[in-house]
Each structure stands twice: as C-alpha cells, then as structure tokens.
Length: 128
Length: 128
Image 1 (cartoon, each protein chain N blue to C red):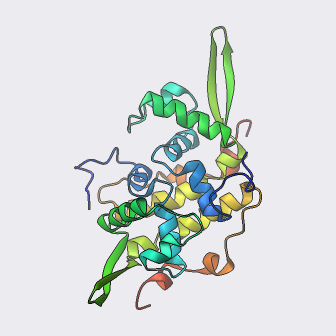
Image 2 (image 1 turned 90 degrees about the vertical axis):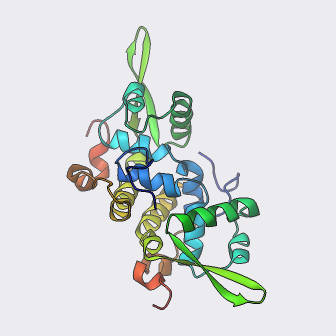
Image 3 (image 1 turned 180 degrees about the vertical axis):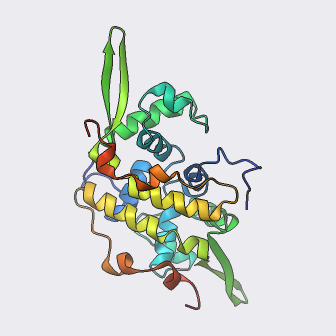
C-alpha cells in the first residue's frame, strides 16, 4: 500500500481514493463482487462487456491496493477466485450512494436492487 | 443528456454514473466546487495540479452531462465561472462517503473537513 510520503497527489482523501478506483471499470468489478460474483469469467459476462485486458489489469490494481484478495479454488490446473477484503467491502456505501444518484438522474436506468441497497459491508466478506 | 436507448453500457445506474464521472479528475473538480471554488484558475491551483488540457476537457464533459453550469461573470473580455447544478450538488453524499472511506484506509490522508461532511446538497447551489 502506498503511503502519502510516496506519491499520492495530495493529502486529500478523495484524491487518494480516485487514484485507486477512479476509472470506468474498477467499481463495476467491486459491484459484481458485492452481488456474489468471484471468478474471472463471471466478471467478463457482466453486461458492460469489459475487455479481457482491462479486466486483468483492474483485478491486479485492485489487489495491489488491498481492495480484493486473489485465492486459489482449485490446484490442478490452478484456478483463482477474487474476494473483497474489508477495505473493498467498505466501498459498498459509496456504491449505494452512487447508484441512487445515477438512478435519479439517468433516464431509464434501473433502480439499485433492494438487496444491494439493504446490504451491509460486513455481510460481503468471505466466511460471513 | 444521453438516454439509455443511445449508448450507455448497460441499464445499471453505477455503470451510467461511471461513464460520466469515472476518472481521476472529475470528482476533484466537483469537490472544489463544493468547497466554493468556481473559476478555472481556482481549479488549476488545487494541490493535485490538474493539467490545463485535462481541466478544460473535464469541465466540458461535466457541463455536457449536466453536472455543472458555465456562466459569464464578466463580458469584456468574456470570463466564465462554473457552478454546480442540482445534479452536481447531489454528488455530495457520494463524495462524503468516498472521503470517509479513503481517510479510513489511506495512511496519512487528512480527514474530510467538518464543514464538508456537514454540508447538504441544497446549500451548494447558487442563490442558496
């Protein structure tokens, strides 16, 4: 994890947050994990159609930033799944607010699902 | 404003939101406006040091997406300032959650200022 003495742009927490998840895809992967998806193919099959090279890059960045954990679910051949860390699960309130905002202002967008809005970060962690 | 029949990636409100503000800079400009900044030079002087070409691009995108309004404050020579629309002001709860999240997880980041956390969207609008 970077510390501010290294190379964040400023001490502003918003700036640091956007350095980690400020792009068009990272929070959609977190959204998918909040909804129970955990495997590479699951993320690829989401309706936005994330390109495979971008998915691989974002998964690596999310892992480097401590937002997700990669762990094997099969050894021969090795296969991995991705799970939210506590840091990642704590992005849920951000996603809930952002979903409400966009539903209010984007004509035709669906409302955030009830179970998504009712979820709590601690319920998203493995071994809950 | 785009409608979903045009070219959003999916009906998911999060996806639509990230198409509008999913980058490293747009929400920092909205943050600056929440803190009372309104002019091009103000945004340039923020500690993150946004490059001028990116600032001009993001201001145009934010205006096209109805998040900010551009209005003249001087006519000869013409000079403009940028103000939050109701849609833009309603991003405040997202920024508040994101600021709390990053402060919790980024060592050394400053806490979101008390007045920022206590603000309400309607207080951010011109003529409040």
